[in-house]
Amino acid sequence: MKRNIVFIPTYDYLSDALFCAVAPLLGEYNTIYCNTRELIDWDLETGKKRKGEILRCFVEYRDVPGFPRENKLKKLFGYPAFNGYFRRLLSEMDPAAVVTTSDMSASSKFAAAWAKERGVPFIVLQPSFFDSGAFSDVTSVGYRLKHLLYNRLLSVPLAPEQKQWGNESLEGRLFLWGSYFKELFRGLSVYERISVTGNPLYDGYFMAQKNKEEVDDETYREYGLPKGRKIVAICTEGLTPAVYREARERLNAIYRETVNKRKDLFFIVKLHPRDSLKDYENVFNDLGGSNLTLIKDIQLKKLYRVCSVQVSVCSVSSFEAVVAGVPIVLINPDGMIEFDDFFENRIELRAEDAAGFERCIDRALTDDYRVEFERKRARYLEEMIDGTEGKAAERTAEAILEIIDKNPTMR
Image (cartoon, rainbow, N blue to C red; front, side, top):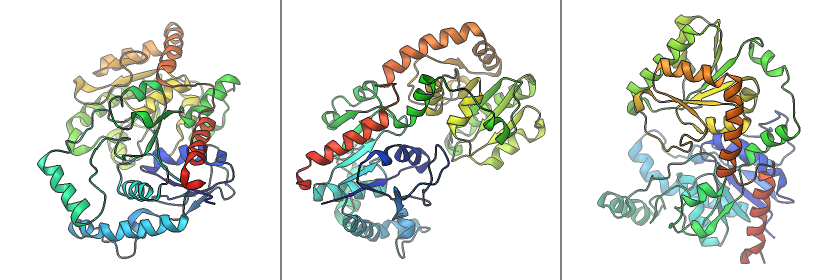
């Protein structure tokens, strides 16, 4: 009988903690983690070492013998070797299910094709916000040529017949945070194969709020943060410089002006995993460090225990801040940055310039706004997430096991 469940991360900074939350609840199954970077053998929430629940087996194409990573043309023609190598690994692991956080990476596409051939469930867990309008025109000449090159000539399933996150696999299952997100897929082939389970990452927040846990001093000490000042957390978003160069410059100028002016506040700039610490040191280095620190490796759970306001353009980090009970400010210089808006003026304050940004921060720090925010927060989370009782990881694991149990290949 198959006893393995294989996890394939896409953007490991989104996947790791999600998988760590679900893996221990999968009964007697071995959970094999196909990590894209390094062995994850520790609990991302507590920092404690695990005892073998998550095992390493594969490091994307970097572990494929002789795969040409640098030369783009050679890399293109190296994909058949990558596909073959990955398929052999999957066959050796013989999983009862393959679980991932995207069906759009090369490895997940290869896994989805392999799973379809073998009758193995292929399950995508929602790790973050997604671009609900990011359809590729699969009927266009360019896409048909891509399909001909990859799928027909090279025999690698890199250009599926339909293309949108969560909807690429014709037989895959999709687990979403709430009914709100499910409705975005209405009319698509995956709609009837969606399970609404909640977000396992948020269980800790809801349980802490339920148990009325107090903020401890550990995070203040660990990062040298002041306890006597209000802390504003600015979360960057990895905006592509080639696309958003001017917008990034405007955004950083607003942050600089506010940090320099508001010495009564303390600012934490939490860097996105794709952002460079050196780049942001260059942005802020002449301001001194009396009311500012740059941090890349702090867990959001720790950050939101100490901050009073959270700031981003329109990031899922702001959604998590709302879950944590922290008021949010969304800032978009003159509306220059385009994004899917999952906030829709239901829970956030908004600014487009430095003056507006400062006004929003001041308002978010008032007692009256805090009362207003808590009232809106309850309604907003009820609309966005199905289940805020802290049991999403259990529901996710139960749904995975149910799909496996009902799969004819397991009988």
